[in-house]
Image 1 (tube, rainbow, N blue to C red):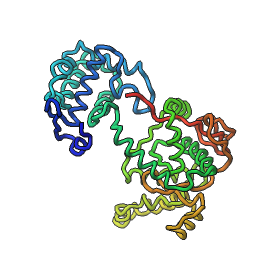
Image 2: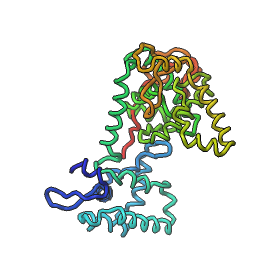
Image 3: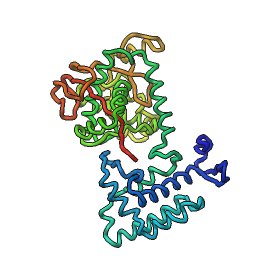
Image 4: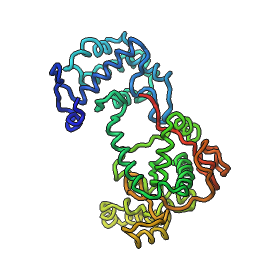
Length: 368
């Protein structure tokens, strides 16, 4: 399988070198979906992709995955049989148009028999998302995910502060504060690079990460690295403002307005004066979340190397710089979860007066 050629044109066909049958990214995803349904009905051991982890709260449940699969993909259904028997060996039938047609008929039958209420909402959409556009045997495009992680790694290794113990300690404290903020906010929060480094480290231990965030945050936190620069920029500005409001300390020395104040906002501020006032109000709030002293220092020494640990700051995916302000309190380093002596330690929040360290965890670790 030529991955590069496939991903250049998702709907274009390649030909199998052995049988010369045409296939595409969509064809491969559809074939894998049909094969998984067949395997599920035969063995009941391999779960259907997208059923194990709930996208809303990140909870992991084999029971719910089994229940949904038994109802949606039962071999007793004519519509499912139409997918798994002759079509599974016919490449012309391995397309999402045909699959979705049969699934809609199956859902219609479940609705008539009042069984649809026993199936989780939007589960079919999540299942299709786990197969469509993915040529590999995983629920995500693993190759693309690894490429994104390489970009993050490159940002990290090019910063001198990464090996500094003081930065690592402060990053641990700030990461716990970031999680505390995430627990209270329903909006997208974007980390600075030091916080993101701690976050990535935590995700290395998948099972622990899942348990830690579900227990302390109330849901499994998904680290979405596929967001666009515009979304990240706006999220960074919102995060800086929320951080200052909660902790009364700067979040970064790079003023969020540098990314948030787009040309469109400037033009709209002139055309619609009330909107302009709102923009000015938000800019004022965002600037409060900026470490002005370090910002001036950074501007003065622009382009020069410096040992100043807190010169760099930025947004994961937006700016390639990093740490910012010293966090209040002390940190015991990495080891054993947020079990320190801070006021908010142990309740899933950050530490307002210190932290016993973040015990690390692991990615969103869910199955399919």
